[in-house]
Image (cartoon, rainbow, N blue to C red):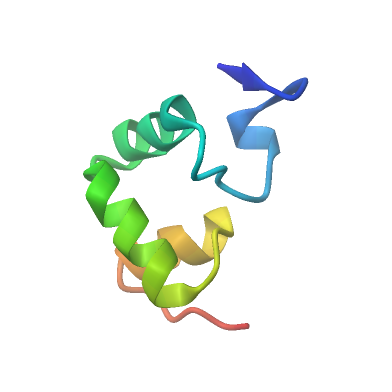
Length: 62
């Protein structure tokens, strides 16, 4: 999957307005799209690393 000439795994942010990108991360991490959306809202960040850490119980540092 590619967007803006970069594969999703080469990016640092999740584009929340691109459904197929949110789908990609949800499938990769085995979580729902709603979980990702909730994490982004709670964190006020769409950083791939921050969202992953939040979802899997790791401490998120900013």
